[in-house]
Image (cartoon, rainbow, N blue to C red):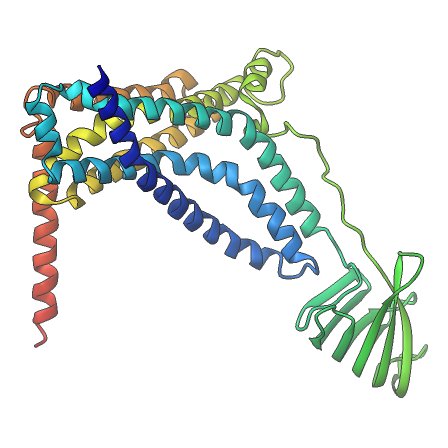
Length: 399
């Protein structure tokens, strides 16, 4: 018994750094892609970096939940392939340790990750999703806080637009100022100045803009154009505060916790259709329950990769996980449109995936090196080899 416990500790120790590394790399990649898009959305906000920090923090629970299955499987595949290449699994099997016993610590780790996934998808993510939308809404409607960034267009209201070529770090000292303003009579005025300074007034509702050496272009009461030059010019500019979120949490099924999804589905006056709520509930449960099943798939594929390398097995696993995730999303869409019950459209893909994992593992118990998984890996390896050969031939053809 002590020897088996030692094996468990050894297996889990091997999983630690590959799992942490896979989570960090995958999570960082997903967040970076989203952060770049957010920077583009927030380019007109004077406090875009403050908003960006809040938005990124609220995205972590969502992307961490999506990262866990892929990172767990990558770490499993790396560890199993290493054990297989070093013939440690052959030694374990020869010493009397069964194929089923080897996978036990990995299934146990999958159960731990399943609990974490339920907490993320079931409770943290709904709140963080609403918080993300609240911050994004505030950022998009933040208006103007009294500072200007070089090259940024500021519109405190519908009648005033301002931009500048250069500005200091605080956004107060400006160079190359351009202002377009509509007065109370509806006439357009354009003001340009070489330099300017912004000072927030004590009332907190406006700012004073002091301009030096510029021109004012506009029209008089008769509509004739007029141009005025000035050495100094001051104008009062209103500040615009951020708008609040227009609705409370719960207007979207993705903002509800697991318990709220169930209670909302039982209400006769719910604004969200019952099948939509149940589809969201089953999709979250399915993603969490898939984690303990991944070792049953990773172990046979990892053993099959000994002769042909890890790439074919990773390709098969990636296609299976991607197909499973896409089927869940497709099933949610069918249920939301009322074309299929949620139990069938969302529960069906999970049952098929669970059956595939179980069948792959069961067929590998008697002859781990000669299974349907091995045959699939061999076919994929042949396809990849032919593709590499054709690519080399095309590269050599011009020479």
